[in-house]
Amino acid sequence: MTRLEIASIVPLVLTPLLSCANATLAQQPPLQAITLSDAAERALAHHPVMAAADARADAAAAAAGVARAARLPSLRSEASAIRFQEPMIVAPLHRFDPQNVPPFDRTLIQGNVVAQWTLFDGGARGARIRQADALEDVALAQRASAERALVAATASAWLDARLAGDLLAACEAQRDALQAERRRVSQLLEEGKVARVELLRIDAALARAEAEAAAALAERDVALADLQRYTGVPVAPAPADIAVPGAPALDEITARAVESSADVRTARARAAAAAAAHAQSRAGWLPRVDLAGRYNEYGSGAGDVSWEWQGGVQLSWALFTGGARAREAERTAAEARAASADAEAIARDVEHQVDRAAAALTGALARVRALEAALEQQQEVVRVELLALREGAGVQTDYLNAEAELLRTRAALTEARHAALLSRIEIARITGALSPAWLENALERGQ
Image (cartoon, rainbow, N blue to C red; front, side, top):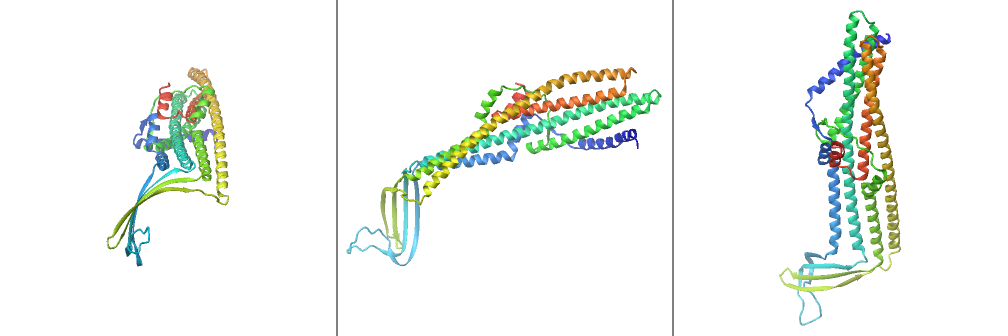
């Protein structure tokens, strides 16, 4: 089988498949059109990653509240009823008086109310509070990081679906142009004015256009499925204009990224928690002073009840721990140094991420400008080639090559715009500016 015969068969194979796919899509309910910012808001409201981040933040806030509660005195009550084999003293015995024998009973009933307040613990309580507050800040920073990552992923899926849709539209536009040319060539072939090879060339070009359209259709379906997983509902990108923002000043965004990055904030909060843990370990070298008061009730099974109060100051001081106290201080000091170094390393990595994203944005914007000019020129080339062909002064292969180059230019321009948008979104994520409101203002409104 020759190449020309194969080229004539390919459209007959691909066209029914694409028609079947289009019919299947037509039978499905229409997808809800959604803007980029609305898609991000829906993802934040419905995606389980945000529910998990919120729960962790709530748990850390509760743990910080528990730590701060140690600054206040504690009050508790206890009660017990104990049965003895032999009769037992069931009232306080403060002195020996043979004339006043204390009551004995096999059942001892006790109750008390105890108040306690730590006056001094070497700073351990304050260190625990600082550690809990730092861990709460870690959870909040992780929540912010998860939110920005989810917004970025949702925006990427939305833009991927939009990119695939634009590529599909470009393929369909080329297919329409080729089909119009095929009708003209078919008419000329019937009149005997052209050779059959020209129709076969058109059919081969149509087959390529159909194949590229099928690939774009498959990519759009995958992107729409990803978008549905993020938003929780079947949606499609709304046909709204998305501006390609310019590149911001590198020094400005680098400084903003280090100060606002959720990753840097998380690392610094972990370093603060490690420093607080080290301070808590140092407090083990100092004594602990507690103020305590107790109100006791004693009674028997017969109902004899007596009351008394107690109060005082308790001092405790670990004089020797076998070296455990010193080793604990060394361990926490090493962990604090490691956490501080991690924070510095993450800050430098964020700067590197900004440099890469800014370079990618600059390159993508340059490609956009160049491809926009190339697209205008290539559209003019196609117009001239088609006009020459219809006037009988052109060559069909030149027109087909021009149409193919036009499709490639359109696809490259769409991909360059897509890359520029993703790079700008990545910069907004790193600098902490990414949110549904930022997507609406910076991309949808172009402010």
